[in-house]
Amino acid sequence: MNNEQEELKKIWQAVLGGLEVDISPANFHTWFKGTFIYKIKDGQAVIAVPSVFARDWIRDKHQKDVFYALKRLNNSIQSLDFKITTQPARNANIVMVVGRGDGGSGSIRGSRPNLNPRYTFDSFIVGNNNRLAHAVSVAVSQNPGKLHNPLFVYGGVGLGKTHLIQSIGNAILQKYPKKKIIYLSCEDFTNEFVQAIQGKRIEGFKNKYRDTDVFLVDDIQFITGKGGTQEEFFHTFNALHQKNKQIVLTADRLPKAIPDLQERLSSRLGWGMVADIKPPNLETRHAILQSRCREMNWALPDEVLYFISQSIYSNIRELEAALTKLIAYCQLHNQVPDNKLAAEVLEDLIQAKAADRTPEKTMAMVAEYFQLKKDDLAKKSRGRDLMLPRQIAIYLIKSDFNISWAQLGRMFGGRDHTTIMHSREKIEKELVRNPEIKRLVTEIREKMETE
Ligand code: ADP
Ligand code: MG
Image (tube, rainbow, N blue to C red; front, side, top):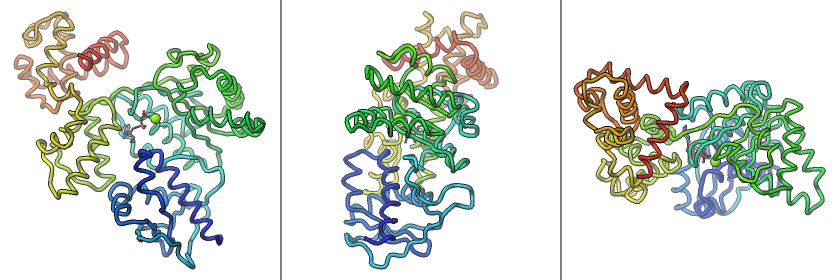
């Protein structure tokens, strides 16, 4: 194989490495098997695919991802094309740009971190559910090692932890191309450690991790119970922390809630900044879908986007999967979706509770939680015992449903819309500064989602 082909192969491996994170293994193997870069010439990258099906699938679903991933590695690329072939080109002509004008690294180095270029702050939608986590992540990426160390981000499945931690990596890579960045999942760390022991390469392992500038470890909860790995991680952590190297960790829960975690490690994980990500409210979910549509160049009626946002509320990955499924269906059948079609196509994805949730029911559930009657919340009374439940109900309904201020006002006994808006703002503010209110709202939400 000649040098050019070797280079193309490296680029493609880096691109696939990034994409693999995002795509289910079955899809990844089915559609990317046998693909390679046919050539890069005059600003155009031509990707070889073995079949029409693979081409269509990649073009429909991942054209942009492939394009941006390539562009990050070779900034001269301006466009993308596909060629159905299994044979490499002769005389492929590749233009490698070394060093990008904007300060990024254009050449491929052996130590390129394994980051998905799609995970950036630009593509991350900020809402009340993740505002703090986002803000501290941005701060950390601007001044790694200086502000919050370690940064510990936690939250449920599919809420954006991986997106956020990789955005930190990508932003640092942009701003400080010389810094060594390691991103990996806790499972990879464990596997590599075990292999290093077996292969007697422990020194190399230690040097690699203790010598990095930025250490990003995803899903640290998987370190539970693994004594040897915890020990090694503990020493890596100390070595990096002492040198003011930035450490960022994600988990699905707080450090102290990770079972079988050595006390000394658990306490260190919480040394710096701890920020959580919660499920997004309706507006944020809607904004995420809008942004995905823009990214992928799809147009769907806004009403349908709201329908999807209302139907799937606890996992953004599933929210996006629903969008993709509906679009694939509509492309195949050449149809413009409305809510009815969306309900049919997405039947098995729609969350059971969403199907029969209404603003009225939320109002009733909040009343019940406070041992009141639903009508009490609509009363004119401004008594303190009714005011808080009413404000919480208004907050939750506005967060979860596409409902106007006027409609809300009518539901709550004909209140005018400034009163209603004020109620909502009140709770939003309290949620940030008053742990008691935060606990109440979380508890009510959990009750709604489990009952
Ligand atoms: P987690 O690691 O918490 O399980 P991910 O980071 O993998 O979740 O997020 C799942 C999907 O949802 C990804 O495709 C991600 O890009 C998307 N996503 C999550 N949060 C946001 C957000 N705030 N804005 C845009 N996309 C998001
Ligand atoms: Mg993740």
